[in-house]
Image (cartoon, rainbow, N blue to C red; front, side, top):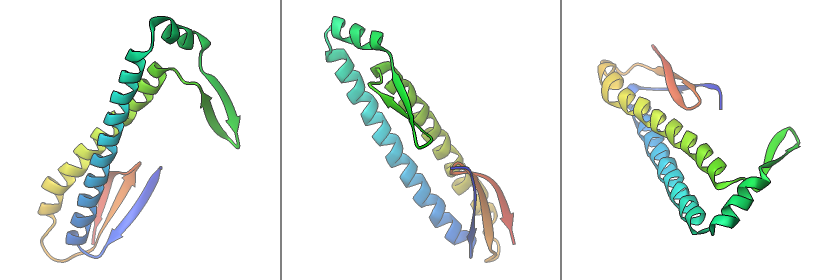
Length: 129
């Protein structure tokens, strides 16, 4: 995702946007959590020899148009990736909630414009005009 800058006509507009981003991050967190549970159920339902055989095959990786493509990832590999995604989503929610509860109320004086610098969807800095 990288660095992006969003400009808002007022702190109230920024507050609405941050609220929407919190809701989106919570939906993503819920989705990832459901996927983790599904993978765990699928992995636990595999007979021991099938799970061991699949793990022994290893992950096949190819590069297509500059993208990594994983074929037949193991359940453990999927879980590791989703655990990282859950951690990122939770960190994003934490920072967005702090922004909404602590920073934006302190900036409500006046109806000034505000710009927010995001790094991977996480507020990193603010410019208050």
